[in-house]
Amino acid sequence: MNIPQLQIQTTPAKLGLQIDKPVQEIEQPKATLNIEQPAAVLEMSTTRPKLSLDTTENRADLDLKSTMRRSAENAQYGMQKVQEGTARRAQEGQQLMKIENGASVADIVKQKTDRPQADMNVRFVGDRTKIKMSFSQGSLDVNVRPQKPVVDAQVNRPIHNYTQGKVTGIMEQYNSIDIDWKI
Image (cartoon, rainbow, N blue to C red; front, side):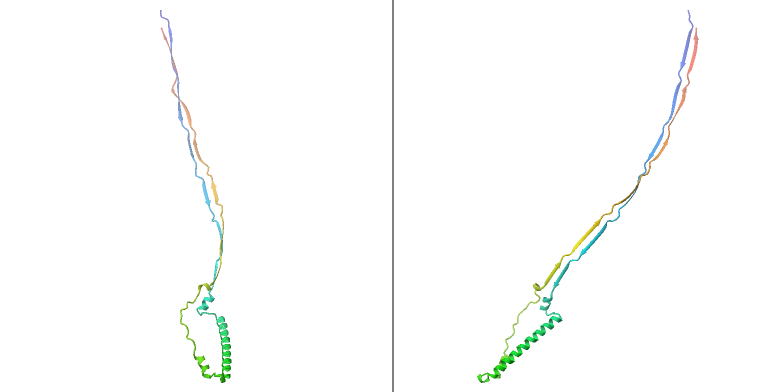
């Protein structure tokens, strides 16, 4: 006996997705930076050192005397020679007064003409120990004031481009039902 049969055949629907991925672009520009360094303020003050040399006595040894000193020495020398001359003439007068004791004019002339011979020696002039020296020390004062740098920084915003993604559904296969009777 044949029983009728009902045959049902189904085909499922297939849904597909078309996906467009999102695109994101981010760019960070560098910061704009401007740095300026002002020069430091430098102040210097000096006191000059002073060296003083007094070579008056050395110059006098070399017969390089000032006019005032030479005039004073000549005046003193003149006074001394005048006194010596006066004393010599007084002594000669005393000798001539005592002619009866055997003194004669010839003795006086002989005293004037018999002079000792001068010594001939080498003499060094310009003794360095006669130099008078004085020294005052100098100084240097340095004052430095550093200046702070001037920094101008500007942060640039990031550049952000975004293209949104998209999902589209598509039917890859439609569903179907086949019904068939078999007898």
